[in-house]
Length: 171
Image 1: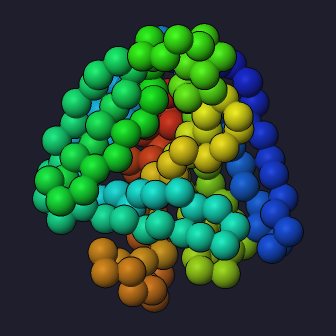
Image 2 (image 1 turned 60 degrees about the horizontal axis):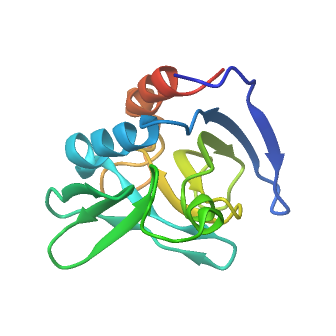
């Protein structure tokens, strides 16, 4: 399932270091991964774009409904929803626009040195313009379920991230 590449490392202006473990985006691997995340693990996740100057940290209060139509995965909570183009999209007359809309890069990541958490574990998707589509944050070993700092890390909280990274990403 993975693309065979070694992790890439990015150093942020804020002093953070992020290790990215890319996964192959061809076929339906991203669709299958996100469907599993949003149907089986929704209660453990925080989602939304995380970009310089804006962080959408959305958590689910109940299981969302997950559907697919023309390459778009829809995650619907009833009160709100979002769409992600994770597979082939034919609803446009332009092949270039379809290429831009679809996930072009997907990577599991671990960031160290942030101002909010010593370490963060997640998954990030980018479109064909290299714009961030979404970040999925996994349970954090340094915080409890209410985001209160733990006296000692609980490393078992990283098991979901590690298991999915092993299944879907390159090392």
